[in-house]
Length: 506
Length: 97
Image 1: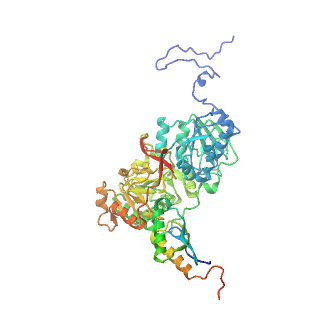
Image 2 (image 1 turned 90 degrees about the horizontal axis):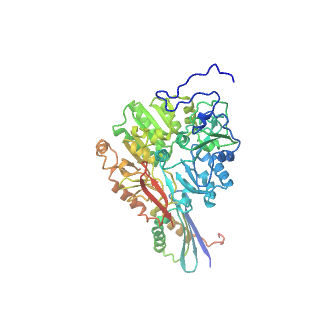
Image 3 (image 1 turned 90 degrees about the vertical axis):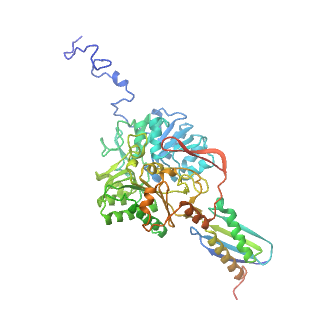
């Protein structure tokens, strides 16, 4: 027995150390106690099936997905087909959002592979829920609420699937490079952090380390190279065009006027507006107002468009906080502009975090499928009562922003958008401040300060009840759609309380 | 028996395409109504259509209404025009002199 000349005398107890263990070169015993083997180089597995197998997939598990590949996503359907082939049943699907392309998963609902959805639904999947096709009601959460639920354990994710536009063999993931580049991966951070097992699926495996990385090797268990994760032209759009529709432009101009007179359009101004037709046009109008007044804003948050990028370049805003990049300009900017920053959904909107971006927002411009005379907003169900949309960041930004502006035509087709009572309450009226339509603007009577700022400025201010009457005079009073007793959807507020339930359409 | 046909409107949003087929003799009105607003406004729409038919003294015929979210005023105008065109039209299959 040779004596190692490097043997050190280590006492059995040491102050400040709980259990003293002597170092042994090459020993792995201490590592084996770790929940995850830290030094794991061989994360690449050749098939999704094998990765799921190694993750210990079994009946009843919860699988999460993020939606940055939008309608170009091939990963959700790919994985669910394999889950079905493996004979797994009763899966809870936890996507941050779904798109029409995911209609294909309905066959797995019919054959029992998918039990329910927690997170978000869209289009055909929502329609199926409304007609009672899921065994258990779907649970709808906002982007912030989804993070809170995962963080607090209300929603435990067994396996997180990351659609990775680029990845290396250790599982670092980048969203800004690769054939399926989508920009920000903001909604996937929570999944990677909290899921028991994390599988990155990529069609662009690059040498270690891939940079700039956003999802980290410290959280990823397995990396699966596949041929294709997305259809590029359906992931991000080209330049989003500002609407030519005069009615929508009129609403957009009114929004800019409200913002101008709100008292908030001063240096440090911050805002969020979506990529929808009216929101995009409203941003364009606010952009002009800022130029005219020489206002230098602090940040734009949320989904980022080429227009946001232009405003950053023009110096109108200092920072873009990007949870989702909507077009090619946004992706390119995120990749190279240090003031265009990727943010996680938690950083963006999570009430359980120690501070989130929405609380710093001055103005949020948001859409609606219905608003009622108490300023409650419905974004989930259409006027016929069918569940068609997820929540997105609607209730989060409304709660946080100093002024929440709802933009909507007074009626769509012959459906009035301002009604007595919304079919589904998504965002509570106490967080909604202004409703802007092409025929009038209603301010929440709870916001006397805002009302004072807007009075006498030539804006068509109206009581919301008058706005409702004006709509119904043209359209008639709609009958309530017929609902059954069975609850098919649960709308969870961002703090985890239940704000409404959605019943089956009959 | 011969049929006379008239058409009015479009399939644009907020409009309706109405095809009125009016026979030379017969009884009863048939309204084939397709609309995204059926759930909320079916009764109002049927009332609007039959109202116009009564005003024009049309006692029999088939009204095919493909609605795309038209307001009542639009719907009534399209129905009236389609019916008037049908009444003024030559019977189906007949040759222009």
